[in-house]
Image 1: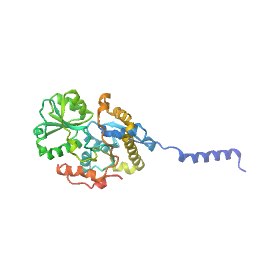
Image 2 (image 1 turned 90 degrees about the vertical axis):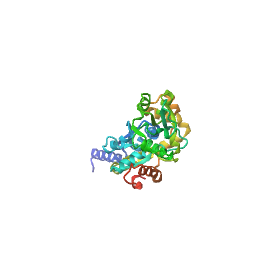
Image 3 (image 1 turned 135 degrees about the vertical axis):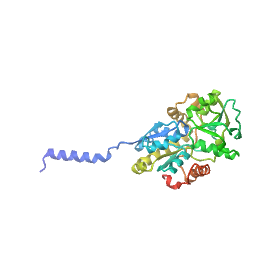
Image 4 (image 1 turned 120 degrees about the horizontal axis):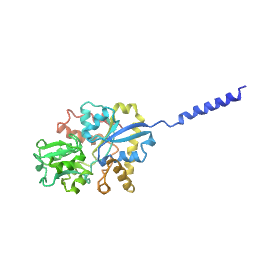
Length: 314
């Protein structure tokens, strides 16, 4: 006959063992590198609305001043996820970094006027031809704005090699124009709105409206090795971004969306209320990425056209 105490001990041990599979595992922690633009809205929403945590991934956004710094930061594991522009990502892959696309940020739209060529007050720049010989700041050499702007120059019959491009982070654009260090900047909201409202510059062209609709402006990436080691976390990140895109697309959530953006980009209320927010692009397709690859091959920014299918995690 089993002693009562032993039986109780056995029952308690059995109950404890049965409870173990029900115990929630600690979420996978991942730092996400972003730059100060609204195209990261879905990351901010998913973080603040709990879409990541409820799926078992704890994503911590971290501000990175220049977009081209994101792939090296991912490679060094100082961040695990990040949002380089498609061109920066493709250059990183071309250079040998084994990174993959999980999902996307914003998308191009002919209705969006939140990106433009902003010229210094008094510079006289009005057309693409006026940019020849001028010093123009871009927030990352080889990044989305730089590559897209050079494609626009070509469409206007201007040789981009005759334009002097200098790298300058978004927050510097207004000061560099005011000080006369740059003749113009290729910039985006909220910085474009602030420059124009301050009188330091004016919009010479909403050049991005010539781009095809639906191209990714940012791709959310990770090392392939990290994805392979954390498949559930990678899927959780994708699902969190998809849910955040649905939240962003609901007009009832407009005020909340702007509140979440303002927390991470630190905008004054009047600026935050006026900035345009790009349509979200939670799924990055091979054809959409191909447009960027073709532009970069033409601009001699890639050694060869990559195998795009191998760079996208389904």
